[in-house]
Amino acid sequence: MAEEPSADSQAQAVRQDDDLVAIDRASTGDGDAFEMLVRKHQTRVFSLAYRMLGDHAEAEEMAQEIFLKAFRALKRFERKSRFSTWLYSIATNHCLNQLESRRRRPRLQELNRSARREGNPGPLLDQVADPTAGADQALERADLQRLVQEQLLTLTPEHRSILLLRDIQGLTYEEIGEILSLEPGTVRSRLHRARMELKERLQPYR
Amino acid sequence: MNCHDACARFSDLRDGRLSGVGRTELEGHLAICPACRREWAHFQETIEALHGLTPVEPSPGFAARVRAQIETPPWHRRLVRRLFVPWQVKLPLEAGALVLLAIGTVLIYQRSPEMRQVVERPGPQQPAVPDERERLDAAPDLTPALKKPQKGQAWRYLAPLIGRVSKPRGDEAAPKAKGDDDGSLGVRAGKLPSPGELAAPSPPTAGAPADRRETIPPSSPLSQSEARPVAPREAEESTHALSTPAPPPALQPFRIMTLRTRDVAVAEKRVREWVQQAGGRLLDPSPAGEPIPSGQRAFSVVIPTQAVARFDALLAELGQLFGRELEMPPSREALISLTISPKSPPPTESE
Image (tube, rainbow over all chains, first blue to last red; front, side, top):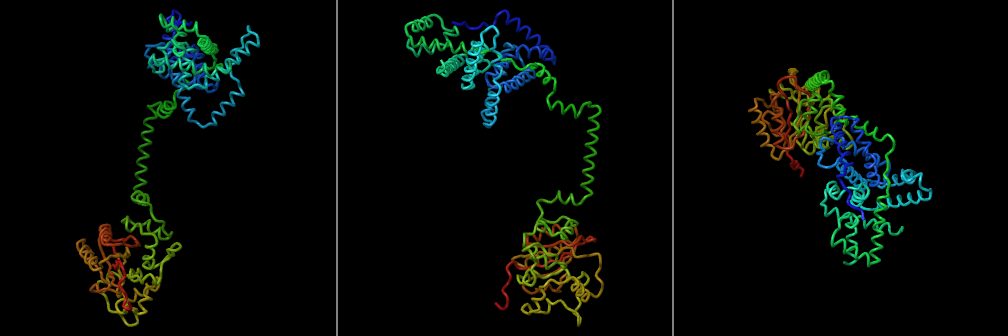
Protein backbone atom coordinates (compact mmCIF):
# COMPACT_ATOMS: atom_id res chain seq x y z
CA MET A 1 0.00 0.00 0.00
CA ALA A 2 1.31 3.49 -0.90
CA GLU A 3 1.92 5.89 1.92
CA GLU A 4 0.77 9.49 2.09
CA PRO A 5 3.42 11.56 0.24
CA SER A 6 5.58 13.53 2.63
CA ALA A 7 5.33 17.27 2.12
CA ASP A 8 8.24 18.19 4.31
CA SER A 9 11.10 16.19 2.98
CA GLN A 10 14.57 17.71 2.96
CA ALA A 11 14.68 18.03 -0.82
CA GLN A 12 11.36 19.83 -0.91
CA ALA A 13 12.52 22.20 1.78
CA VAL A 14 15.57 23.05 -0.26
CA ARG A 15 13.46 23.55 -3.36
CA GLN A 16 11.06 25.67 -1.37
CA ASP A 17 13.96 27.82 -0.24
CA ASP A 18 15.12 28.16 -3.81
CA ASP A 19 11.61 29.17 -4.80
CA LEU A 20 11.43 31.79 -2.10
CA VAL A 21 14.63 33.48 -3.18
CA ALA A 22 13.48 33.46 -6.79
CA ILE A 23 10.03 34.71 -5.78
CA ASP A 24 11.55 37.60 -3.87
CA ARG A 25 13.58 38.60 -6.88
CA ALA A 26 10.77 38.03 -9.35
CA SER A 27 8.30 40.08 -7.34
CA THR A 28 10.59 43.08 -7.77
CA GLY A 29 10.35 42.60 -11.53
CA ASP A 30 13.41 40.41 -12.09
CA GLY A 31 12.64 38.61 -15.34
CA ASP A 32 15.53 36.15 -14.96
CA ALA A 33 14.26 34.97 -11.59
CA PHE A 34 10.76 34.46 -12.88
CA GLU A 35 12.04 32.64 -15.95
CA MET A 36 13.87 30.32 -13.61
CA LEU A 37 10.62 29.64 -11.73
CA VAL A 38 8.85 29.02 -15.02
CA ARG A 39 11.49 26.53 -16.15
CA LYS A 40 11.24 24.71 -12.86
CA HIS A 41 7.45 24.37 -12.82
CA GLN A 42 6.53 24.47 -16.49
CA THR A 43 6.32 20.69 -17.00
CA ARG A 44 4.00 20.09 -14.07
CA VAL A 45 1.81 23.09 -14.86
CA PHE A 46 1.68 22.23 -18.53
CA SER A 47 0.91 18.56 -17.76
CA LEU A 48 -1.90 19.58 -15.49
CA ALA A 49 -3.33 21.88 -18.17
CA TYR A 50 -2.94 19.24 -20.86
CA ARG A 51 -4.58 16.49 -18.78
CA MET A 52 -7.40 18.82 -17.87
CA LEU A 53 -8.04 20.16 -21.37
CA GLY A 54 -6.85 17.36 -23.63
CA ASP A 55 -5.45 19.70 -26.26
CA HIS A 56 -1.77 20.52 -26.62
CA ALA A 57 -2.10 23.98 -28.17
CA GLU A 58 -4.85 25.04 -25.80
CA ALA A 59 -2.88 23.70 -22.84
CA GLU A 60 0.17 25.70 -23.89
CA GLU A 61 -1.90 28.83 -24.18
CA MET A 62 -3.42 28.15 -20.77
CA ALA A 63 -0.02 27.48 -19.21
CA GLN A 64 1.26 30.82 -20.50
CA GLU A 65 -1.75 32.57 -19.05
CA ILE A 66 -1.29 30.75 -15.74
CA PHE A 67 2.32 31.91 -15.42
CA LEU A 68 1.39 35.41 -16.45
CA LYS A 69 -1.34 35.47 -13.84
CA ALA A 70 1.04 34.14 -11.24
CA PHE A 71 3.61 36.78 -12.08
CA ARG A 72 1.07 39.56 -11.68
CA ALA A 73 -0.16 38.10 -8.38
CA LEU A 74 3.28 37.33 -7.03
CA LYS A 75 3.16 40.13 -4.49
CA ARG A 76 -0.02 38.63 -3.04
CA PHE A 77 1.62 35.24 -2.45
CA GLU A 78 1.53 34.95 1.34
CA ARG A 79 4.03 32.07 1.63
CA LYS A 80 1.72 30.12 3.92
CA SER A 81 1.81 27.24 1.47
CA ARG A 82 4.35 25.97 -1.01
CA PHE A 83 4.79 28.02 -4.16
CA SER A 84 3.88 24.98 -6.26
CA THR A 85 0.59 24.56 -4.35
CA TRP A 86 -0.22 28.20 -4.94
CA LEU A 87 0.68 27.81 -8.62
CA TYR A 88 -1.51 24.68 -8.97
CA SER A 89 -4.31 26.52 -7.35
CA ILE A 90 -4.10 29.20 -10.07
CA ALA A 91 -3.68 26.53 -12.74
CA THR A 92 -6.60 24.38 -11.60
CA ASN A 93 -8.98 27.30 -11.31
CA HIS A 94 -7.88 28.68 -14.66
CA CYS A 95 -8.44 25.33 -16.34
CA LEU A 96 -11.83 24.87 -14.67
CA ASN A 97 -12.83 28.32 -15.90
CA GLN A 98 -11.61 27.45 -19.36
CA LEU A 99 -13.63 24.22 -19.35
CA GLU A 100 -16.68 26.13 -18.20
CA SER A 101 -16.31 28.71 -20.97
CA ARG A 102 -15.65 25.93 -23.49
CA ARG A 103 -18.94 24.33 -22.44
CA ARG A 104 -20.72 27.55 -23.41
CA ARG A 105 -18.85 27.97 -26.69
CA PRO A 106 -20.26 26.72 -29.99
CA ARG A 107 -19.64 23.17 -30.99
CA LEU A 108 -17.49 24.26 -33.95
CA GLN A 109 -14.52 24.92 -31.71
CA GLU A 110 -14.83 21.49 -30.18
CA LEU A 111 -14.76 19.97 -33.66
CA ASN A 112 -11.66 21.98 -34.53
CA ARG A 113 -9.98 20.70 -31.42
CA SER A 114 -10.87 17.10 -32.27
CA ALA A 115 -9.50 17.55 -35.79
CA ARG A 116 -6.31 18.95 -34.36
CA ARG A 117 -6.01 15.99 -32.03
CA GLU A 118 -6.53 13.54 -34.88
CA GLY A 119 -4.06 15.28 -37.18
CA ASN A 120 -1.44 15.65 -34.48
CA PRO A 121 -1.36 12.94 -31.86
CA GLY A 122 0.49 15.26 -29.54
CA PRO A 123 3.51 14.67 -27.45
CA LEU A 124 2.26 11.44 -25.92
CA LEU A 125 4.19 9.10 -28.21
CA ASP A 126 7.32 11.19 -27.87
CA GLN A 127 7.06 11.03 -24.15
CA VAL A 128 6.71 7.30 -23.93
CA ALA A 129 9.35 6.52 -26.53
CA ASP A 130 11.77 5.04 -24.07
CA PRO A 131 14.91 3.96 -25.98
CA THR A 132 15.61 1.22 -23.47
CA ALA A 133 12.19 -0.38 -23.88
CA GLY A 134 11.16 -2.46 -26.83
CA ALA A 135 8.98 -0.96 -29.57
CA ASP A 136 6.02 -3.17 -28.71
CA GLN A 137 6.20 -2.24 -25.08
CA ALA A 138 6.38 1.44 -25.92
CA LEU A 139 3.38 1.20 -28.18
CA GLU A 140 1.40 -0.70 -25.59
CA ARG A 141 2.29 1.91 -23.02
CA ALA A 142 1.34 4.69 -25.37
CA ASP A 143 -2.02 3.05 -26.05
CA LEU A 144 -2.69 2.73 -22.36
CA GLN A 145 -1.77 6.34 -21.76
CA ARG A 146 -4.03 7.51 -24.57
CA LEU A 147 -6.85 5.37 -23.25
CA VAL A 148 -6.45 6.74 -19.72
CA GLN A 149 -6.29 10.29 -21.03
CA GLU A 150 -9.43 9.74 -23.13
CA GLN A 151 -11.33 8.32 -20.21
CA LEU A 152 -10.04 11.03 -17.95
CA LEU A 153 -11.55 13.59 -20.29
CA THR A 154 -14.95 11.93 -19.99
CA LEU A 155 -15.05 12.64 -16.24
CA THR A 156 -16.52 15.81 -14.84
CA PRO A 157 -13.98 18.65 -14.47
CA GLU A 158 -14.27 18.40 -10.68
CA HIS A 159 -13.44 14.69 -10.64
CA ARG A 160 -10.72 15.14 -13.23
CA SER A 161 -9.03 17.93 -11.32
CA ILE A 162 -9.03 16.06 -8.02
CA LEU A 163 -7.57 12.93 -9.65
CA LEU A 164 -4.84 14.96 -11.35
CA LEU A 165 -3.91 16.79 -8.19
CA ARG A 166 -3.76 13.65 -6.09
CA ASP A 167 -2.67 10.80 -8.37
CA ILE A 168 -0.53 12.68 -10.88
CA GLN A 169 0.76 15.74 -9.04
CA GLY A 170 0.90 13.87 -5.72
CA LEU A 171 -0.53 16.61 -3.52
CA THR A 172 -1.78 15.88 0.00
CA TYR A 173 -5.47 15.97 0.89
CA GLU A 174 -4.88 19.22 2.76
CA GLU A 175 -3.22 20.87 -0.22
CA ILE A 176 -6.01 19.71 -2.50
CA GLY A 177 -8.55 21.08 -0.03
CA GLU A 178 -6.72 24.40 -0.09
CA ILE A 179 -6.58 24.53 -3.89
CA LEU A 180 -10.17 23.49 -4.49
CA SER A 181 -11.54 25.22 -1.38
CA LEU A 182 -12.87 21.94 0.02
CA GLU A 183 -12.96 20.39 3.46
CA PRO A 184 -10.62 17.39 3.89
CA GLY A 185 -13.65 15.08 4.30
CA THR A 186 -15.08 16.31 1.02
CA VAL A 187 -11.70 15.83 -0.67
CA ARG A 188 -11.63 12.25 0.57
CA SER A 189 -15.11 11.34 -0.60
CA ARG A 190 -14.82 13.16 -3.93
CA LEU A 191 -11.46 11.56 -4.65
CA HIS A 192 -12.87 8.11 -3.94
CA ARG A 193 -15.86 8.71 -6.21
CA ALA A 194 -13.58 9.99 -8.98
CA ARG A 195 -11.31 6.97 -8.74
CA MET A 196 -14.22 4.55 -8.74
CA GLU A 197 -15.74 6.31 -11.74
CA LEU A 198 -12.49 6.09 -13.70
CA LYS A 199 -12.18 2.44 -12.76
CA GLU A 200 -15.66 1.81 -14.15
CA ARG A 201 -14.83 3.64 -17.37
CA LEU A 202 -11.65 1.61 -17.87
CA GLN A 203 -13.42 -1.66 -17.06
CA PRO A 204 -14.42 -2.53 -20.68
CA TYR A 205 -10.79 -2.25 -21.82
CA ARG A 206 -9.36 -4.71 -19.34
CA MET B 1 -17.84 -5.86 6.94
CA ASN B 2 -19.79 -6.28 3.73
CA CYS B 3 -18.56 -5.75 0.16
CA HIS B 4 -20.03 -2.25 -0.11
CA ASP B 5 -18.21 -1.08 3.01
CA ALA B 6 -15.02 -2.67 1.76
CA CYS B 7 -15.17 -0.88 -1.60
CA ALA B 8 -15.89 2.43 0.14
CA ARG B 9 -12.55 2.16 1.98
CA PHE B 10 -10.34 1.40 -1.01
CA SER B 11 -9.10 4.98 -1.30
CA ASP B 12 -8.26 5.16 2.40
CA LEU B 13 -6.39 1.90 2.19
CA ARG B 14 -4.53 2.99 -0.92
CA ASP B 15 -3.54 6.37 0.56
CA GLY B 16 -2.45 4.89 3.89
CA ARG B 17 -5.20 6.67 5.78
CA LEU B 18 -6.59 3.46 7.26
CA SER B 19 -5.05 1.99 10.34
CA GLY B 20 -5.80 -0.25 13.27
CA VAL B 21 -9.11 -2.08 13.36
CA GLY B 22 -10.41 -0.63 10.09
CA ARG B 23 -7.41 -1.78 8.15
CA THR B 24 -7.47 -5.26 9.75
CA GLU B 25 -11.20 -5.63 8.96
CA LEU B 26 -10.74 -4.61 5.34
CA GLU B 27 -7.74 -6.85 4.81
CA GLY B 28 -9.69 -9.70 6.41
CA HIS B 29 -12.62 -9.16 4.08
CA LEU B 30 -10.35 -9.01 1.03
CA ALA B 31 -8.81 -12.29 2.08
CA ILE B 32 -12.15 -14.10 2.07
CA CYS B 33 -14.02 -12.27 -0.75
CA PRO B 34 -12.71 -12.94 -4.31
CA ALA B 35 -15.08 -10.33 -5.86
CA CYS B 36 -13.76 -7.57 -3.62
CA ARG B 37 -10.23 -8.77 -4.22
CA ARG B 38 -10.79 -8.43 -7.95
CA GLU B 39 -12.30 -4.97 -7.47
CA TRP B 40 -9.37 -3.97 -5.32
CA ALA B 41 -6.95 -5.15 -8.01
CA HIS B 42 -8.78 -3.10 -10.65
CA PHE B 43 -8.78 -0.13 -8.35
CA GLN B 44 -5.05 -0.42 -7.90
CA GLU B 45 -4.52 -0.79 -11.65
CA THR B 46 -6.51 2.35 -12.31
CA ILE B 47 -4.41 4.39 -9.96
CA GLU B 48 -1.23 2.87 -11.31
CA ALA B 49 -2.36 3.81 -14.80
CA LEU B 50 -2.82 7.37 -13.61
CA HIS B 51 0.62 7.33 -12.05
CA GLY B 52 1.98 5.98 -15.28
CA LEU B 53 0.90 9.03 -17.23
CA THR B 54 4.16 10.63 -18.17
CA PRO B 55 4.65 14.35 -17.72
CA VAL B 56 4.07 16.36 -20.86
CA GLU B 57 6.57 19.02 -21.87
CA PRO B 58 5.53 22.26 -23.47
CA SER B 59 7.06 23.17 -26.80
CA PRO B 60 10.64 24.47 -26.78
CA GLY B 61 11.06 28.12 -25.88
CA PHE B 62 8.02 28.15 -23.61
CA ALA B 63 9.79 29.88 -20.71
CA ALA B 64 11.24 32.52 -23.04
CA ARG B 65 7.78 33.21 -24.46
CA VAL B 66 6.34 33.60 -20.98
CA ARG B 67 9.17 35.97 -20.12
CA ALA B 68 8.53 38.01 -23.25
CA GLN B 69 4.90 38.27 -22.23
CA ILE B 70 5.64 39.41 -18.70
CA GLU B 71 8.03 42.02 -19.99
CA THR B 72 5.35 43.41 -22.29
CA PRO B 73 3.23 45.63 -20.09
CA PRO B 74 -0.54 45.21 -20.29
CA TRP B 75 -2.44 47.24 -22.89
CA HIS B 76 -3.76 49.82 -20.42
CA ARG B 77 -0.28 50.55 -19.14
CA ARG B 78 1.04 50.83 -22.70
CA LEU B 79 -1.79 53.21 -23.56
CA VAL B 80 -1.12 55.40 -20.54
CA ARG B 81 2.57 55.42 -21.34
CA ARG B 82 1.92 56.36 -24.95
CA LEU B 83 -0.48 59.11 -23.97
CA PHE B 84 1.31 60.73 -21.05
CA VAL B 85 5.00 59.79 -20.97
CA PRO B 86 7.10 61.93 -20.80
CA TRP B 87 4.50 63.72 -18.72
CA GLN B 88 6.50 66.98 -18.47
CA VAL B 89 6.06 67.41 -22.23
CA LYS B 90 2.85 65.63 -23.07
CA LEU B 91 0.62 66.75 -20.23
CA PRO B 92 0.95 70.52 -20.87
CA LEU B 93 0.56 69.96 -24.61
CA GLU B 94 -2.56 67.86 -24.12
CA ALA B 95 -4.04 70.31 -21.62
CA GLY B 96 -3.45 73.17 -24.07
CA ALA B 97 -5.03 71.21 -26.89
CA LEU B 98 -8.06 70.48 -24.74
CA VAL B 99 -8.48 74.16 -23.83
CA LEU B 100 -8.17 75.17 -27.49
CA LEU B 101 -10.70 72.54 -28.46
CA ALA B 102 -13.14 73.78 -25.83
CA ILE B 103 -12.72 77.41 -26.92
CA GLY B 104 -13.17 76.43 -30.56
CA THR B 105 -16.32 74.50 -29.77
CA VAL B 106 -17.82 77.41 -27.84
CA LEU B 107 -16.94 79.87 -30.60
CA ILE B 108 -18.42 77.70 -33.31
CA TYR B 109 -21.53 77.19 -31.23
CA GLN B 110 -21.95 80.89 -30.58
CA ARG B 111 -21.40 81.91 -34.18
CA SER B 112 -23.60 79.42 -35.88
CA PRO B 113 -27.31 79.93 -35.24
CA GLU B 114 -28.07 76.70 -37.10
CA MET B 115 -26.11 74.68 -34.55
CA ARG B 116 -27.75 76.49 -31.66
CA GLN B 117 -31.13 75.83 -33.17
CA VAL B 118 -30.33 72.13 -33.54
CA VAL B 119 -29.11 71.93 -29.92
CA GLU B 120 -32.12 73.76 -28.51
CA ARG B 121 -34.66 71.90 -30.62
CA PRO B 122 -36.48 69.44 -28.35
CA GLY B 123 -37.39 66.75 -30.86
CA PRO B 124 -36.89 65.64 -34.45
CA GLN B 125 -38.21 68.14 -36.98
CA GLN B 126 -40.76 67.28 -39.61
CA PRO B 127 -39.24 67.28 -43.06
CA ALA B 128 -40.01 70.53 -44.78
CA VAL B 129 -40.33 71.42 -48.43
CA PRO B 130 -36.90 72.68 -49.55
CA ASP B 131 -37.66 76.38 -50.15
CA GLU B 132 -39.69 76.58 -46.97
CA ARG B 133 -36.89 75.00 -44.99
CA GLU B 134 -34.54 77.79 -45.98
CA ARG B 135 -36.87 80.29 -44.44
CA LEU B 136 -37.31 78.21 -41.32
CA ASP B 137 -33.58 77.99 -40.81
CA ALA B 138 -33.30 81.75 -40.64
CA ALA B 139 -36.19 82.02 -38.22
CA PRO B 140 -35.92 82.39 -34.44
CA ASP B 141 -36.99 79.74 -32.00
CA LEU B 142 -40.59 78.67 -32.20
CA THR B 143 -42.88 77.06 -29.69
CA PRO B 144 -43.28 73.33 -30.12
CA ALA B 145 -46.86 73.84 -31.25
CA LEU B 146 -45.69 75.91 -34.15
CA LYS B 147 -42.62 73.89 -34.93
CA LYS B 148 -44.33 70.59 -35.29
CA PRO B 149 -47.51 70.95 -37.28
CA GLN B 150 -49.43 67.73 -37.55
CA LYS B 151 -48.79 65.91 -40.73
CA GLY B 152 -51.23 66.91 -43.45
CA GLN B 153 -53.13 69.39 -41.33
CA ALA B 154 -50.58 72.16 -41.38
CA TRP B 155 -50.32 72.26 -45.12
CA ARG B 156 -54.03 72.08 -45.49
CA TYR B 157 -54.42 75.29 -43.59
CA LEU B 158 -51.21 77.04 -44.35
CA ALA B 159 -50.80 76.66 -48.07
CA PRO B 160 -53.60 79.06 -49.02
CA LEU B 161 -52.39 81.48 -46.36
CA ILE B 162 -48.98 81.91 -47.86
CA GLY B 163 -48.95 84.09 -50.92
CA ARG B 164 -46.47 82.04 -52.85
CA VAL B 165 -47.62 78.48 -52.53
CA SER B 166 -44.99 75.90 -53.10
CA LYS B 167 -46.43 72.55 -53.88
CA PRO B 168 -46.08 70.17 -50.94
CA ARG B 169 -45.42 66.47 -51.15
CA GLY B 170 -47.99 63.93 -52.42
CA ASP B 171 -51.34 63.89 -50.68
CA GLU B 172 -50.46 66.91 -48.58
CA ALA B 173 -51.14 69.15 -51.57
CA ALA B 174 -52.74 72.43 -50.59
CA PRO B 175 -56.49 72.46 -51.08
CA LYS B 176 -57.97 75.23 -53.11
CA ALA B 177 -61.60 76.32 -52.86
CA LYS B 178 -62.53 73.29 -50.80
CA GLY B 179 -60.06 74.26 -48.11
CA ASP B 180 -62.08 77.35 -47.26
CA ASP B 181 -65.32 75.49 -46.74
CA ASP B 182 -64.35 74.31 -43.27
CA GLY B 183 -64.19 77.90 -42.19
CA SER B 184 -60.60 77.88 -41.06
CA LEU B 185 -59.22 80.23 -43.62
CA GLY B 186 -59.65 83.94 -43.80
CA VAL B 187 -56.42 85.84 -43.96
CA ARG B 188 -53.86 85.62 -46.70
CA ALA B 189 -50.47 87.10 -46.83
CA GLY B 190 -51.23 89.00 -49.96
CA LYS B 191 -54.25 90.61 -48.41
CA LEU B 192 -52.73 91.62 -45.13
CA PRO B 193 -53.43 95.27 -44.60
CA SER B 194 -50.51 97.45 -43.73
CA PRO B 195 -50.46 98.76 -40.17
CA GLY B 196 -51.13 102.30 -41.24
CA GLU B 197 -53.99 101.25 -43.40
CA LEU B 198 -55.54 99.12 -40.68
CA ALA B 199 -55.29 101.86 -38.13
CA ALA B 200 -57.40 104.12 -40.34
CA PRO B 201 -59.28 101.98 -42.84
CA SER B 202 -60.26 103.87 -45.96
CA PRO B 203 -63.62 103.26 -47.64
CA PRO B 204 -63.52 101.22 -50.80
CA THR B 205 -62.93 103.31 -53.85
CA ALA B 206 -64.82 102.87 -57.08
CA GLY B 207 -63.16 100.49 -59.52
CA ALA B 208 -60.86 99.15 -56.94
CA PRO B 209 -61.51 95.73 -55.41
CA ALA B 210 -62.62 96.33 -51.85
CA ASP B 211 -62.38 93.83 -49.00
CA ARG B 212 -65.01 91.40 -50.13
CA ARG B 213 -65.61 89.92 -46.72
CA GLU B 214 -67.35 93.06 -45.67
CA THR B 215 -69.66 93.34 -48.63
CA ILE B 216 -70.36 89.90 -50.00
CA PRO B 217 -72.67 87.57 -48.04
CA PRO B 218 -71.36 84.10 -47.23
CA SER B 219 -73.84 82.37 -49.48
CA SER B 220 -72.80 84.39 -52.50
CA PRO B 221 -70.85 82.51 -55.17
CA LEU B 222 -68.22 85.21 -54.90
CA SER B 223 -67.40 84.17 -51.38
CA GLN B 224 -66.43 80.77 -52.78
CA SER B 225 -64.05 82.28 -55.25
CA GLU B 226 -62.46 84.24 -52.45
CA ALA B 227 -61.19 81.04 -51.00
CA ARG B 228 -58.90 80.56 -53.93
CA PRO B 229 -55.35 81.48 -52.96
CA VAL B 230 -54.52 84.84 -54.36
CA ALA B 231 -51.56 84.98 -56.69
CA PRO B 232 -48.77 87.28 -55.50
CA ARG B 233 -49.24 89.74 -58.33
CA GLU B 234 -52.98 89.94 -57.76
CA ALA B 235 -52.45 90.40 -54.04
CA GLU B 236 -49.95 93.12 -54.65
CA GLU B 237 -52.36 95.00 -56.90
CA SER B 238 -55.07 94.64 -54.31
CA THR B 239 -52.83 96.03 -51.56
CA HIS B 240 -51.78 98.93 -53.71
CA ALA B 241 -55.36 99.80 -54.46
CA LEU B 242 -56.35 99.79 -50.82
CA SER B 243 -53.49 101.70 -49.32
CA THR B 244 -53.26 105.40 -49.73
CA PRO B 245 -49.84 106.01 -48.14
CA ALA B 246 -47.03 103.54 -48.79
CA PRO B 247 -46.73 101.03 -45.96
CA PRO B 248 -43.78 101.57 -43.64
CA PRO B 249 -41.06 99.13 -44.70
CA ALA B 250 -39.89 98.40 -41.16
CA LEU B 251 -42.79 96.15 -40.17
CA GLN B 252 -43.23 93.08 -42.28
CA PRO B 253 -45.71 90.24 -41.76
CA PHE B 254 -44.02 88.03 -39.32
CA ARG B 255 -46.43 85.21 -38.75
CA ILE B 256 -49.67 84.11 -40.22
CA MET B 257 -51.58 81.99 -37.80
CA THR B 258 -54.93 80.35 -37.45
CA LEU B 259 -56.32 79.47 -34.06
CA ARG B 260 -59.09 76.93 -33.98
CA THR B 261 -61.01 77.14 -30.75
CA ARG B 262 -64.40 76.19 -29.33
CA ASP B 263 -65.41 79.64 -28.29
CA VAL B 264 -64.23 82.29 -30.71
CA ALA B 265 -65.56 85.20 -28.65
CA VAL B 266 -63.79 84.14 -25.47
CA ALA B 267 -60.56 83.54 -27.33
CA GLU B 268 -60.76 86.92 -28.99
CA LYS B 269 -61.42 88.61 -25.67
CA ARG B 270 -58.41 86.96 -24.05
CA VAL B 271 -56.18 87.82 -26.98
CA ARG B 272 -57.27 91.45 -26.85
CA GLU B 273 -56.65 91.65 -23.11
CA TRP B 274 -53.30 89.98 -23.38
CA VAL B 275 -52.10 92.21 -26.21
CA GLN B 276 -53.05 95.28 -24.21
CA GLN B 277 -51.19 94.02 -21.18
CA ALA B 278 -48.15 93.14 -23.27
CA GLY B 279 -48.01 96.70 -24.58
CA GLY B 280 -49.02 95.75 -28.09
CA ARG B 281 -51.91 96.81 -30.27
CA LEU B 282 -54.61 95.16 -32.31
CA LEU B 283 -55.32 96.12 -35.88
CA ASP B 284 -58.77 95.00 -37.00
CA PRO B 285 -59.48 94.68 -40.67
CA SER B 286 -63.10 95.42 -39.77
CA PRO B 287 -63.15 98.37 -37.38
CA ALA B 288 -65.39 96.95 -34.68
CA GLY B 289 -64.00 93.42 -34.90
CA GLU B 290 -67.23 92.57 -36.68
CA PRO B 291 -67.57 88.83 -37.31
CA ILE B 292 -66.50 87.87 -40.77
CA PRO B 293 -68.36 85.08 -42.59
CA SER B 294 -68.42 81.59 -41.03
CA GLY B 295 -68.01 82.92 -37.50
CA GLN B 296 -64.35 83.85 -37.74
CA ARG B 297 -62.44 86.80 -36.39
CA ALA B 298 -59.45 88.12 -38.26
CA PHE B 299 -57.08 90.81 -37.10
CA SER B 300 -53.45 91.69 -36.95
CA VAL B 301 -51.51 91.96 -33.72
CA VAL B 302 -48.46 94.11 -33.21
CA ILE B 303 -46.49 93.09 -30.14
CA PRO B 304 -42.92 93.49 -28.95
CA THR B 305 -40.70 90.84 -30.47
CA GLN B 306 -39.65 89.51 -27.11
CA ALA B 307 -43.30 88.82 -26.24
CA VAL B 308 -43.84 86.52 -29.23
CA ALA B 309 -43.02 83.33 -27.35
CA ARG B 310 -45.47 84.20 -24.57
CA PHE B 311 -48.09 85.04 -27.14
CA ASP B 312 -47.59 81.64 -28.75
CA ALA B 313 -48.02 80.02 -25.37
CA LEU B 314 -51.28 81.87 -24.82
CA LEU B 315 -52.61 80.80 -28.20
CA ALA B 316 -51.60 77.22 -27.55
CA GLU B 317 -53.65 77.37 -24.35
CA LEU B 318 -56.68 78.69 -26.16
CA GLY B 319 -56.95 76.06 -28.85
CA GLN B 320 -55.35 74.33 -31.77
CA LEU B 321 -52.80 76.50 -33.44
CA PHE B 322 -51.58 76.40 -37.02
CA GLY B 323 -49.14 78.84 -38.36
CA ARG B 324 -46.27 79.73 -40.52
CA GLU B 325 -43.37 81.99 -39.86
CA LEU B 326 -42.45 84.15 -42.80
CA GLU B 327 -39.58 86.45 -42.00
CA MET B 328 -37.77 87.85 -39.04
CA PRO B 329 -38.95 91.41 -38.56
CA PRO B 330 -36.19 93.95 -38.66
CA SER B 331 -37.89 96.13 -36.06
CA ARG B 332 -38.50 95.56 -32.36
CA GLU B 333 -42.14 94.82 -33.03
CA ALA B 334 -43.61 91.76 -34.62
CA LEU B 335 -46.70 91.72 -36.76
CA ILE B 336 -48.84 88.64 -36.40
CA SER B 337 -51.82 88.05 -38.60
CA LEU B 338 -54.31 85.97 -36.63
CA THR B 339 -57.53 84.30 -37.60
CA ILE B 340 -59.65 82.76 -34.89
CA SER B 341 -62.03 80.20 -36.23
CA PRO B 342 -64.52 77.87 -34.53
CA LYS B 343 -63.43 74.30 -34.11
CA SER B 344 -66.52 72.80 -35.76
CA PRO B 345 -67.82 74.89 -38.66
CA PRO B 346 -71.27 76.44 -38.03
CA PRO B 347 -74.13 75.23 -40.19
CA THR B 348 -74.53 77.15 -43.41
CA GLU B 349 -77.66 79.14 -44.17
CA SER B 350 -78.80 76.66 -46.79
CA GLU B 351 -78.87 73.96 -44.13
